[in-house]
Image (cartoon, rainbow, N blue to C red; front, side):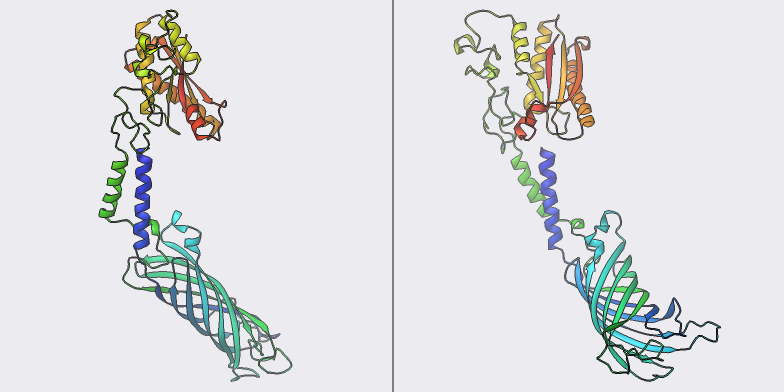
Length: 428
């Protein structure tokens, strides 16, 4: 319980420290590579699959670790395939585009940090303006003004604090383009900008560098909030608060903030809420009751007046009624401090009755895989077995076995599941 609380508060402190940390938001990009006009191309003209001749310049601003805006300028030229086939027509077309795009940091959105801290991925889409200017054929020298839509992905490789290598593949659709990329044929009946919709498709592939601007440790592309730490002073304050919460004033094994009876007498058996146990309900607490599992008046120290019952019968009745148990926390085989007195009770009884042997039975609740719970229940029984052997009980008088999940309790109730996480005893 203490470890759980401590780890929870430390995690909160780390998150606070991360939120207080700023990251750089601006970056510049420069790259170059290939282009490919897909359509329209007039019959008899071909373009290479990878036409070297494209340059990209961009400036980007990130609102946060996941989203931002980018303004970029791209220009270049497209030429014929360069085949030796004389039938293939020659063309050379210049172009430029200017676009405003939305950026999404797909690497952060898809949690790339779970497997790498040096690879990233950006997605982008937007629109802008541009022109197409053939240098050869019928419409050489004509300027064809267009609008465009662009979408693409940008893989990244972090090279250092202020620089990253990137690659980009983008598809662009031009609107109002009125001549083919080769400059030989009008798309419509005549060159008349404005009468034709999104009728031209092309793509670019570039490789370049991103330069991050700012004085912080990371740019938004690589910033991971969980990596940032709170100050030593903030952690010290949080940890001191935990220490105060975990004080156990009466020494019963239950911290004060959970203890409903913070002044329990020394040596008293308590439940998980720190309250003194009275197993037989006779008004005499177990630590003062000479017969803790048989009701009796205080005048006889909690034992029945009517008849004298052998101690062995007391013990057997307590076992049969399910009063003597050692309890465990969730997914733990270490006995809870308040319940180890049950093991001490059994140890004392066995020492006073040398002809008796005991089987220790381990159980688990129904949460988790059944095979795992079977092994956990056996470890719980073995833990109590080790306590009894360490207390001086001969191992030949003891046996232990895991019985797996206790299905007799309501698994939807936290209190019931706590009762299921136990080790019980059976007198042989």
